[in-house]
Image (cartoon, rainbow, N blue to C red; front, side, top):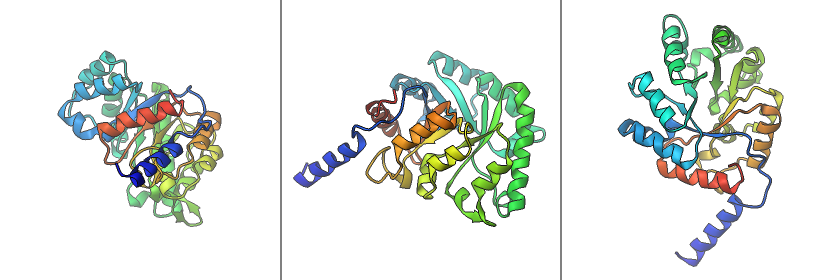
Amino acid sequence: MSTAAAAAAAASDRLLFAAQNYGGKNVPIALQLYTIGADLRRDMPGSLAAVAKLGYKGVEFAGFNNVAAKDIRKMLDDNGLQAVGCHTALNTLQGEEFDKTVEFNKIIGNPRLVVPSLAANYTNSRTSIEGAADIFNGIAAKLKPLGMRTGFHCHPGEFRQVEGATVWDTFFTRANRDVIMQCDLGHMGTADADQVAYISKYPGRSATVHVKPAHAAPLLGDTADTNKWPEIFKACEGVGGTEWYIVEYDGGSMDKVVRTMDVLKKWGKL
């Protein structure tokens, strides 16, 4: 390694592991399995075993790769993992699909059905955004007696202005407290949205959050990651009502899953 490269690496380490207060250890760590999608498709039992061995306590699904619910449940139980959520399309929570979706997720032990994105027709006007929130309120009411919840996950586009307010604000002003506000902390940072302000504005509603670096930084806490993690963690643990931190990378890999756990350990989150 050249002298310049060594200096850069040292500077990165100082940023990553500076002696700051990153909050407590009271929120367990899960993995969004989209991060290791290729590994999961090739070998789901081996991938889940590897994730558990690293110290992750739960997983959030982004599809089930045509594996039967009873088989997924066995893999989870064998590895001491909890199903903490699943990203599921809105149409699978409506009409005839609702009962099928609920039954599958009850078998695997997953209580949170989070919609990862909405089509443009749901977010192109204040009226359409409020209408979408009303749909979620209806779904939440059906799920509540079953011990399950729904929620909405953000991308940068949710922080654009539509008729004087962001999509995210209009949606969660209308949606009731039973609808989870799943903040993707990386997407929010990329959109220059203030994560702490949003978590504080809607207290108790960030039951699960995606722990992801902003601006497609290669690793959590890298110099390209503008997220202010000490403040974010404190907000989640103080007013957010956060029950799970869910690590995720777009275009991820098992290597990032390993290295991120090392970062979180050095930050005192485990």
